[in-house]
Length: 251
Image (cartoon, rainbow, N blue to C red; front, side):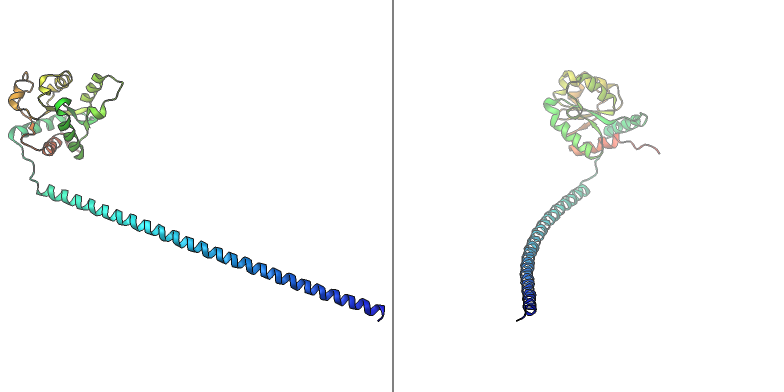
């Protein structure tokens, strides 16, 4: 062979080797791409499965929450309906003549007053009047009556006497829960009642005492008028007080 043919042979062999090398690189690249695609596909399938499981778990929790909420709402609706049926079946409160005159006197007096922060100042003796006073207060507030109540309104560190005096001035009317302990003339109840006595808006509520007991207490009431837990339920008394103190203002 001539030198020229040797050179051509070498060139052909080099080109063939280059083609084989390129083909090998392409095969390896394809295998790498296929492997990467398989791994990506497996990863995506795992992610989709996890997402489906997470969504299914979330939906189960949402369904459980919704079922619980539905049960709660149904119970609340049933409770409200029972209360409405009880209210509809309960006879309207009735007034004695002295109670009617008391309510009318309070209404007429409040109608001439300036706006106050509270509808009533609630006075009671803690020894034997705390429970009835708290029950009365909650019933009044359920009916929209704002109540100055020492357990809520009194702030520690400030003059107790001053705060009570301010409470009396900031209320349209005073409700005195007259109990046996109240009638003994304890200092605070005596002070509160003394401030209320001159007002035509004093509303006595007798609890476990009689008008005869009250009459013996230094003649504290100008007339023996008031509401009595012996004759009426606390809620009925609250309705009567609410009707007396919540005077509708003229437009």
